[in-house]
Amino acid sequence: MDPVVVVGAGPVGLTAALLLARWDVPALVLERRPEPERTGSRSICQQRDVLDIWAAAGADAIAAEGLAWTTARTYLHERELFSWRFADTGTLPACVNISQSRTEEILTAAVARSPLVEIRRGCEVTGLDQDEYGVTLRCADGTSVRTGYVIACTGGRPEIRDALGIGLPGESFDDRFLIVDLAADLPGWEHERRFHFDPPWNPGRQVLIHPCPGSRYRIDWQVPPGFSLDGEGSGGLDRRIRQVIGTRPYEVEWASVYTFHARVADRMRAGRVLLAGDCAHQYAPFGARGLNSGVPDAENAAWKIAFVARGWAPPALLATYGTERRAAALENLAVTTATMRFLVPRTDRDRAARARALRRAAADPEAAAAIDSGRFAEPFWYTASPLTTPEPDRKSVV
Image 1 (tube, rainbow, N blue to C red):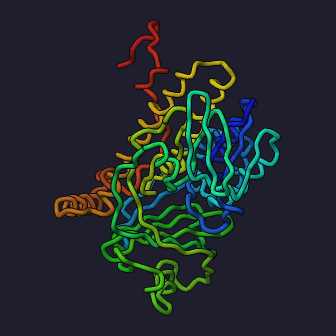
Image 2 (cartoon, rainbow, N blue to C red; image 1 turned 135 degrees about the vertical axis):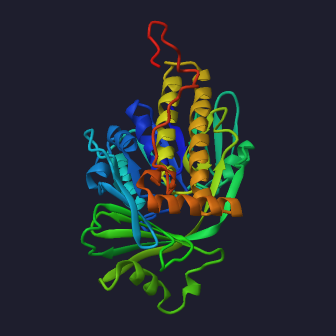
Image 3 (cartoon, rainbow, N blue to C red; image 1 turned 180 degrees about the vertical axis):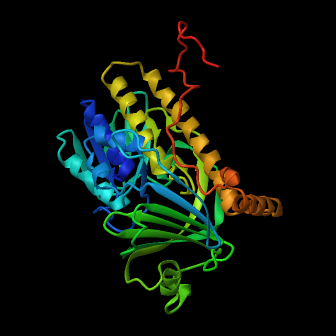
């Protein structure tokens, strides 16, 4: 059997390749980077169902090494509004924090143990053609690869989408976010996520603090449009950090500035090519719905391609990938867009609504449900999928 080609060796692409191998289908991963990227926390929050997928793929070390935080605290100014805890159920933690670079290392090690997966680095895919029998991928070095099926996990890069004529409609947010990874000893913070609305040290905006393994912390500041690290000046970043952690010693390990997008591809399948992860959808990170949506994309794509390639299902099965995973993507888009509307209100009406919600929550803990600092990722229910059929003998529950 010819290998299925996975384009991109990030967490989504590596997951897809490992899951294809689990079905005894060989996979060839084409990655433009000559070496893995080992810097920056990037996508850090991984929820239980994604940890379960990785365990099935031979990467259970992600759950074992990740930091299982338990408590989320939310503040207005410097006063705690409310907190909640994950329910302690199941054999896997509800969520762990672990840097994306370490996740990729663990997945790459799992690939190295599999005789059915090959990674070809320094191979940048620049275009493709497909016919009824397969797909030809063109690479920047002048070579080409022929395959029966492709899973495109290229992140934000547009080449494969453009070659297929697939759009990525949506919007981008003007406000920027400064992200800093630091090492520090912060007693009492080790298992808590802290979200600050309008703190005096970032007035009118938000700050989010996440614990990570090994006494590492990730801090996200909402900053004005046009902000740059170079513009902080001498000592500017240190002042920001000191306002959060006080006089404790620390070491900055990585810092970057991001803008966020809210976009979903108008199709997630074109013939024999399936789009997964950020190649197909891009969200604001609050609620951790990016990688936690991309990994289920990979799982859905892998088993369906495997069933078709092995002759266990007709080619029409691939159409259900786009139906199921695009519906999931649109749900995540709606949830994260609502969060950004609350966090970064763009109209006087939205700003007033947020101010009222925060005032009510400060006076009445029962009003906390209206505070949207990110609705945490959940598995998608395929209720409208053509593969979901009613059971005539099952009694409905009202």
